[in-house]
Image (cartoon, rainbow, N blue to C red; front, side):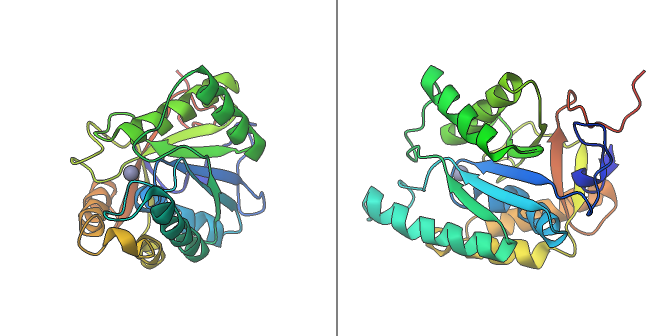
Amino acid sequence: MSAGLPLLSENANGKVSSASHKLKIVVAGAHPDDPESGCGGTIALYSNLGHEVAVLYLTRGEAGIPGKSAPEAAAIRTAECQKACSFLKARPIFAGQIDGNTEVNRSRYEDFRKLLQGERPEIVFTHWPIDTHRDHRVISLLVYDAWIESGRKFDLYYFEVDQGEQTQHFHPNHYVDITQAESRKRAACLAHASQQPETSFYPLHERMHRFRGMECGRELAEGFVRHCQNVETSVPEG
Ligand SMILES: [Zn+2]
């Protein structure tokens, strides 16, 4: 078990990453607000150190605003993504699937792999696959497949969202201290005003920050599962 930024570990090329090496990171979530709530503190820390973070949204949250049509909701939530990413100094990307109607099939795997490879990421974060929301499971599978097909060229980490309500059976093996970055994460999450984050998901994530912080001996933390076949692992091989 370790605490610290993934970027302090060795990367896929066996080099120890540091602020002098500009990393390319993709954080892939199903809906607007998922990357921010699962990983926003870590994104803020990376971007503050000068690394390049792209936030990849599988959908534009078309089904997420009661009373609004899909195009109306997509427009509102796309603007919220852009605002959230500006707080995190990240670049939004949209993968073009539809909220509540996402698909996993041969052509979706292929299209997603090409999109992700085009970003040439060194580290990718995505949803943990055991999750009550179908769209979360879909993006997790798309990323995992792209990771395998790329020859495990990037390091793969899983994040959690709405622990217990959405993400389940999640036991972190890596932690990032977000005590200094929580205010930026909060601002990014609250940018998703159409979702009423102050009363819906953010209070739960505040509890998660404290709990994950307790686990790793820090005040506030985000927990991750680092894939054990990442090349960068700093654990000595037996
Ligand atoms: Zn979601």
